[in-house]
Image 1 (tube, rainbow, N blue to C red):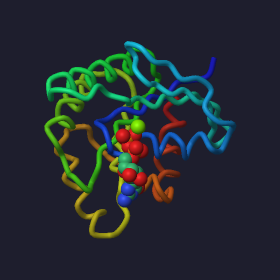
Image 2: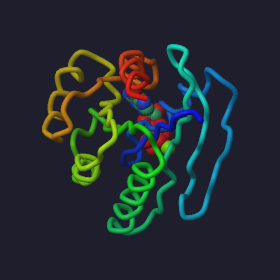
Image 3: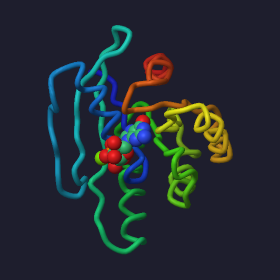
Length: 163
Ligand code: GDP
Ligand code: MG
């Protein structure tokens, strides 16, 4: 059975953009599931000759901030259960938010490889700004731009190495 990689993070950081970039190298989305595990997209991809499945989490309930955060926690907990490795995506444009810290708290206790992807690093100024994400306590991070693919090769090299 191929390994599973889950992409988690708060809305609008660029999870689906990254997912679509991975998946477009193969045939479109394999399966979409709605319900408790709202709007999770599953796809298959490969990198360096290594096949793996990717889960794009998202489609959160729009409502109070509490529901919002609870839903993200649920997605992260599901990802922790079913994935072999986790990509935690954050957004350098907005910087660290309380929701990012909340997710980081969950992931810091996980005994699976976690890759911190700082997305929207479109220019050198943003590359400098990305350093603030060290304070999430997850160690090394990968500066990427999902829209043009910059930095995603380094992230994927490390990711498949851990599978
Ligand atoms: P999701 O909610 O985490 O799935 O985020 P989406 O993939 O839907 O992206 C949210 C917004 O961020 C969209 O407008 C994307 O075009 C934008 N976005 C995604 N990746 C990048 C990036 O690398 N750079 C910039 N500037 N914008 C990005
Ligand atoms: Mg999305």
